[in-house]
Length: 128
Image 1 (tube, one colour):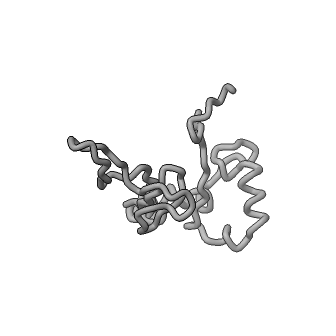
Image 2 (tube, rainbow, N blue to C red):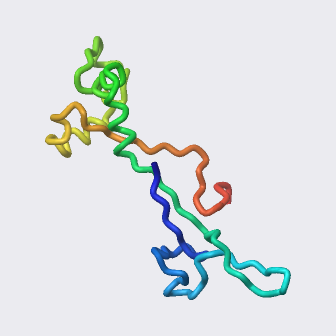
């Protein structure tokens, strides 16, 4: 389950238009046929796809065992408060709890952490 967005070669959203309003470029790849004529194909220049996270999280709560693990940060028993055994024991998690106490009241609320390892958007070299 993902949402697909077609964009022009410059990266602007096309919605249902055949040409970009700003740059005037075609939505689809143009090729030259045997008669040396430029023909537009059904292949888009660029596509952006993103996965909706809500159905994935709902699916995690369908199984009892997984749901128990998803709620452990609120319902789990900690034997030693001085030892960090879960990210919920960290300072960042506690700061979020203090920032929005209504969010922390419900054990099923999910905190999502974004971690990247060597991800460089737009092909930029991380070393430069």
